[in-house]
Image (tube, rainbow, N blue to C red; front, side, top):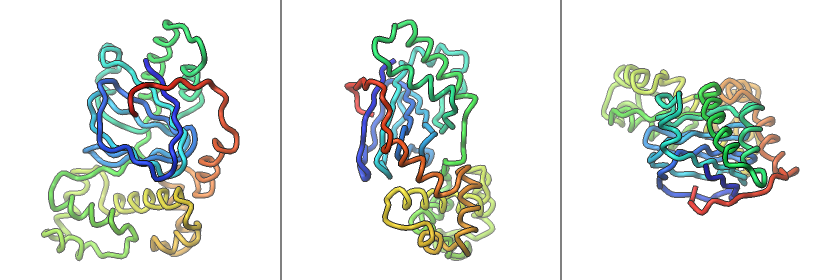
Length: 263
């Protein structure tokens, strides 16, 4: 297992690339967005994204980021008892055990056998802590995909479904049917999640306040925005920003080990 501890500035983009190893990308502080052919994963503090080997992905840094990356060889993943459940990308909530296991891999002079045991434990913990709330899946049907891209380009929620469907060459009824089939979310649920992901990105930029953002995204009040945000993210907008900043105010003391490979 290779470990990498890297700091990236807001606005950094790591374009589409892939690795021979599997990767676990953990945001010690800051916010990143990871895009794969299946969709977009938002990775705020206390979450990490799992990427199997040979998965093409891009990383966008939405708020100054300290990224802890674990690169796990393909054969170790393939031989793991949970290998079948680790052959797709997903986001996990980083609970106390998983967090301490990740950090333990960054300590100085770690015995190779201990590294192997830590890698196995990480893989078991990933299965227990999956969190799909920050994933915005993209439909495959061309009509539904056109609607999804229009919403992502303007996530305010002000455009009626009928107009979006017409612009995509479909009926509102067709789009309403396609979204649950292809994303496991109703169109209303999908658009709400896209709005919250857009909110996280905007808050990470530091260019707007929570009140301004709630108005920009078409919520009736700050309270309504906060409720929708908590429903998706499990925390309020203010709580998320405090967690994002905490790492910058009190940097962790573990020794850095830089990997030669690009994350």
